Every structure is written in structure tokens, then in C-alpha cells.
Amino acid sequence: MQKYSGFGLLKHALTHHENWQRVWHNPKPKPEGYDVIIVGGGGHGLATAYYLAKEHGITNVAVIEKGYLGGGNTARNTTIVRSNYLWDESAWLYEHSMKLWEGLAQDLNYNLMFSQRGVLNLGHTLQDMRDIERRVNANRLNGIDGEVLNAQQVQDIVPILDCSKTARYPVLGASWQPRGGTARHDAVAWGFARAADAMGVHLIQQTEVTGIRRENGAVTGVDTTAGFIAAPKVACVTAGNSGVMAKMVGMELPLESHPLQAMVSEPVKPILDTVVMSNHVHGYISQSDKGDLVIGAGIDSYLGYGQRGSFPVVEETMAAIVEMFPIFSRVRLNRTWGGIVDTCPDACPIISKTHIKGLYFNCGWGTGGFKATPGSGNVFAHTIAKDDPHPLAKPFNVDRFTSGHLIDEHGAAGVAH
Ligand SMILES: Cc1cc2nc3c(=O)[nH]c(=O)nc-3n(C[C@H](O)[C@H](O)[C@H](O)COP(=O)(O)OP(=O)(O)OC[C@H]3O[C@@H](n4cnc5c(N)ncnc54)[C@H](O)[C@@H]3O)c2cc1C
Image (cartoon, rainbow, N blue to C red):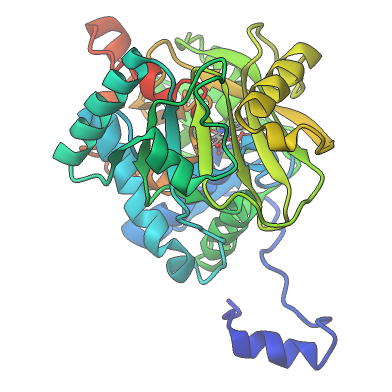
């Protein structure tokens, strides 16, 4: 694999950047099959492949993607990274991910534009503030950074935020996670893909999995638009399509697939150097390095697979942003788009073996799985390699919906992705 460096950039400038190596190969499926097939070439699937190869020495792996790598929710999200979830189980999982983020660009030798610019979750009511205090205290007990700020401290961090007492929902304070921030979503997929490919993983694009074959209660491989591909282990990491995958083996997962929209403004000069989220007014915003204001909505309430949403959600979200930031009222919106998110009843993911030997699911990340990309791949790779859940993944087994051990993260999830 070609090593990226500042020196390399200079060297390639001499040949007008025309001689860069291809970042990954474009292989045909092996006729003899693989040890592990990962269905879904989003960030989570690619991270799983990477950690399978890197940490468990399993390199005879194929990632099968029906479109192009990272073209699903990975390409469509608003890139917020944080780990300040309420319950121990999720805080540990997201903090595991945060720690991986902190060394990931070096690990992958790929610039992920990871920016720990801090994340504010605003409180507009006394109950919001009580919830914020509870969550920040719970986070600190778990060794996760967090502070409770008053309105003045919020105003000091974001001078352009309307913190006036006459606002419809005046800002009373916020939770503040300084280590939270953003990362370049595409780069995450590309970085994992490049590193996995270099260790021998096959990345097979434009190939849809249409069936999962089994014999005597065990997986034997997948049917695809390119024919049958054999493997004793199949791991589905297909986000909004996970319910469709489960149906292929007659399973029903407790998931709903909803459109979730985001939007960007025209690029403007640097004006917002942190992430601001409000569950109450219901919108969140950050500014990309290019200058766009990156704005996220809540889910469209109907089910769908269309990767687009309805106009009223865009309108409501814009209203929320202008309410918080009247200064943006004349900034023009450039683009809107949607992804299909797989939401679980307790707003937590499913990372799980199934009753079928060799079949695994990693899904249910809903509106907030981008931040978990490295952690999710890391614990899922362990679960597949050992055929035994990683300790951090154990609470997220699908059997929690029959045992009743739900982990209700609706408060920490909210609009706040
Ligand atoms: C608008 C929006 C904003 C968001 N904002 C945030 C945020 O700020 N922070 C955050 O943490 N999270 C956010 N999320 C959620 C986050 O994007 C997802 O949880 C995460 O990207 C999921 O990654 P993934 O790899 O599991 O899924 P995806 O990237 O969707 O990858 C799944 C892949 O599976 C492929 N696939 C599906 N079916 C098949 C099949 N049959 N055969 C082969 N391939 C198949 C798809 O084509 C797709 O590429 C947001 C999501 C959206 C839509």
C-alpha cells in the first residue's frame, strides 16, 4: 500500500498528481469462497473487515456492496461524533469508539479530518437541565469528559447563538463534551477500505446479496447478482436494509426503516467552530471545513426505503435553526438529501449472533451510528472471529427484546445524532 505523507504530496505535485496508485482493487468473487462475507460496504462493514484482518488475522474476507463503498448512510450523515450517552452499556461502547477515533487517522494512514471541536446539547427547560446534569454526571462516573454549562458559558462558546431571555425557548444551559466533534464521513469509509484491501480483503461493489443459503441450520454462503458465493460466516451490516436481509432467513428484527434528512447551506466564511444541538427546538448544526452549514433533522415519521424525505421536515428544521441562529435567516440552502435509518425500540444498536450458525447482524444504529463506526467494527469483528460476543457488544444482543433488558437511550439520542 502506498504510504501517504506530506513528502508524497510534494513528489506527486511534480507529475501533476497523475500517478497516484488506485486506492483499492476491484476483484471478482473467489470461486472457492471466503472465510467471512460481510454484506454492506458502509463504514461499519468496512471497519469490521479491517479489524477482522488486523486484529484477528482473518484476511480471506469479502465485503459485498450493492452500490458503491460508503454510498449509504455513511455518505449521507452529518458526521457528529460524541460519546456522552446515558447508560453505562452505551457510554462504554461509544467511548470505545471515541478512543479509536483519536488514533484512527494515524492507524489508517488516512486523513479523516477528525476535529474535536466540542459538542453542545442545549437545555431549554428545567427538565432538560436536570436530564443534562444526570447524563453529564453519569458520563463522568464512566470517565467520559463532560461539563454542565450555564447560559452565559454557552454564549461565550457560541456568540452567534440567540441566548436572549425573549427567545421562544430561552437557552438555560447545555451539556458540553469537548472531545466530541466531527469527521469527514467519506474519508472514514475510504480509509477503512484502503487499509482492509491492503491486507487482502476483497471489496466487491455493484453486487447485491439476494439470498442467504443455509444447510442443517448453518450458513453456507450468499446468493448475489454475480452468482453464489460460499462462506461459513455471513455478517449483515446493511443499516436501513437490515430488515430485508433478516427476512431472507425468515427472521423478523425489531427494526423500523425511516427516512432521515440532512441539508447544507451555501458555503460561508468560518463562523461556527463547534457543534450545537437542541432536542427541544429540534435541530442541530455545525460548519464543515468547506464552509457549508451542515444541518440535521429528525426522522420522517413514515416508513420507507426511498433515500429521500418529505418537505415539511426540511421546513421545520430550517425554522428551528433560524430560531436558534437568527443570523442565518438569509443564508441560502444548497442541498437536502435523505438516508434510510434502522431504528430500534430502545434507540440502541443490535450487535449479535443469531439462532442460525454463522449468521451475524450489526444494525439498529438508527440516527446515530456514524460516531460508532470504528468501535462497532472493532467489537463486531471480535464477535465474528470468536463466534462469541465482545464484552462491550454483549448487552446489545438481539435477545434483549425477549429478555426485557432494553437500554433506553431515547434521551441521549433525540435529534442529537
Ligand atoms: C441524514 C443522516 C444524518 C445522520 N447523522 C449522523 C450523525 O451526525 N452522527 C452519527 O453518529 N450518525 C449519524 N447518522 C447515522 C449514520 O449515518 C449511520 O448510523 C451509519 O452511517 C451506519 O453505517 P453503516 O455502515 O451501518 O450503514 P451504511 O453506510 O448505510 O451501509 C450499509 C450498506 O449496505 C448496503 N446494502 C444494503 N443492502 C444490501 C444488499 N442486499 N447487498 C449488498 N449491499 C447491501 C448499502 O448499499 C449500504 O452501502 C445519520 C444518518 C443520516 C441518514
